[in-house]
Each structure stands twice: as structure tokens, then as C-alpha cells.
Image (tube, rainbow, N blue to C red):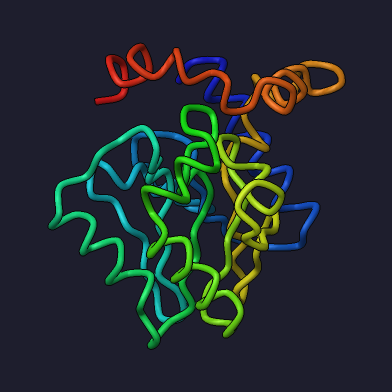
Length: 195
């Protein structure tokens, strides 16, 4: 295991201990992984979804970067419409680095409204990711940093990522908060390495 992942997994376990929980479910990392005390879901664009007795969770959909075919958009809507379990959007559902809030609202009005309706009704929780940490401000979708269901702690994994935790004043998040969706010119590069 690389030093990066050793530190990343140490940070996850440290967060679990601080919250008094035994198990974590997180996104942010692209490759699914199961450990005794945490599960990394992996990205939705690779078909990954987490489900247990109480929740169904998706992460890293990145609407605004990825253009999904109709059948995957229907799968997204199907998950968001689940009423038998709490739906958890675990961050980076929308990508506010690469598409402005106005363009997201124009392109995905039905998805945005569905999320707002489900959240108001208590059937959905939206967790902030590093690509949509301003989701409440930009799209008026209420969000939180973490969610607890039973003995499980749900969060978007960037809060344990060494690149975010090692820099004083959280340099990356500061830059993103200032530049936000003005990073759209990086989209082709992002797609090259994440598709």
C-alpha cells in the first residue's frame, strides 16, 4: 500500500473513532474497496451503488462532466425515487467545477427538483463532496457533511484525503471556493483521465 493510501485509511479510522462509530461508507475514491471497518463505494459512472437494509447510496455521479445515456439517467432517477429506503447522495452528484449552476439548472431541472422534493420529504440526504461543496448556495439544495445511520458513518471521502488534510488553511478548498465552476476549461483533461 502506498503512503498516500496508508494515510488516507488512517484518517478514515481516526474520523470513525472521533465519532464513536464502527463502520464508514464513503465516496471520493474511484475504485471500490472493502475493509473490515469501511467501504468505498466507487464512482457511479462505473455502475457502483451501495445498499444495505436501511439506505441506498450513490456517489460521484458528476452531472456536468459526464453525459449519461438514457438508461443510466433512468437508473439515477430510479434510485432517487426509492421510497423503501433512505437515499443518500454522497457528494459530487453535480459537478460545479465544470458547469455553472445556471447551466446545470437548464440541463437537469427535473433531477434538481426531484432531489429537492425528496429532501423536503425526508427521504433523501445530500452530502457535500469536493466538487459540489457549495450545492446549498449554488442550487438551493440543502446539504450536510456527514450522515449517521445506525452504527455507520456516511461521508464523501475528500475530508480524509491527505491532499486536503495536510495543507494549512485547506488550500485546495479555498482555491475551489474562489474559482468554482470557472474551472470548466479543465473538463477535457478530467474526462481523459477518468473515463
